[in-house]
Length: 443
Image (tube, rainbow, N blue to C red; front, side, top):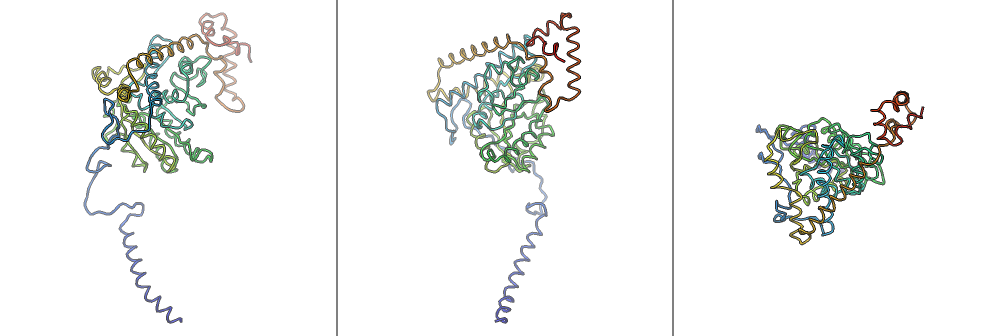
């Protein structure tokens, strides 16, 4: 019995030895930290697609709104199409009014979304209403899609007593709304990118939300030049966390064209370096944006890790009211882009081809939106600012710090001394609810 077992073992040992040796030899051909194959021919590369070809751009509708051959359109009916189009048209209506209002000196600052309506509204439509959104500057359309009213937009830009974003303490267009799962916008560039990775990680660790919610982070290609971009993608790809990064590549970081911002193949080429699924989409094609964001969101939830989408568009407007873009680009270039590849026109032509839209509907919509915006503007202009004492609230939780208390007491003393006798202060206090009496009569 023992001899038979030894005989079996002796026959199997050489086979095991050969298998072990072959496996060991194969392992020796690989480096310890990668499965990259070993080659003997020196070859540099500068493309993730191979053969130095650029990353393709996903598109469903051509420039005149016709589906491309073989295109699989997302599910869309007339009701949804009309809602998408109305929200796309609402953005330039608001932008035109508020841009001019800033020029009149009634608000301090403004940023438009001209040329990027399809990217913003399409992304909003593809996300779930309770996905957490961390925006940059031009994502007002996401809030509007979620039910943020025109009155609230005006209240934030004017900083009046109905401003729920920051009680008048933020710059205009720096929106925030916990109710709509929209995190307050910050002025410093790219800070929202690592924050989004953290928010997504928190969602992943929350049992009630880990299988249904993601964090969607918007930023421009200029923000992708910041270190926070790399920190955020590294965090979201290695922890990992379900963060959907949406880069709006509109061609300019203020006055710096994208050709001077990077030498590689856009922002999408950076995704594979962090091991995350990536796609480049035509940001002027709202149906392509919807499809890309829906699929990106699905992958975030399924894999529990980040996804990167680069939406290609063109910033038709100036960077902000502090910028004159015609100092660094030709006016004719802008007019050509507005005429040749307008995202609103492209989708309107698609709707007309379906029999869902016509000239009468266009006229009625524009008149109605203009009337709604002007009504909200006039109302916001007439409202007071929040109480002056709100300047010191909501900064710290728990017991009020000594330095905040001292600053409030100092301002109260100055108001009691000069507030009613010095005309400039008296005129300014009249703009606040209760005319500063909460501080004048306070401690």
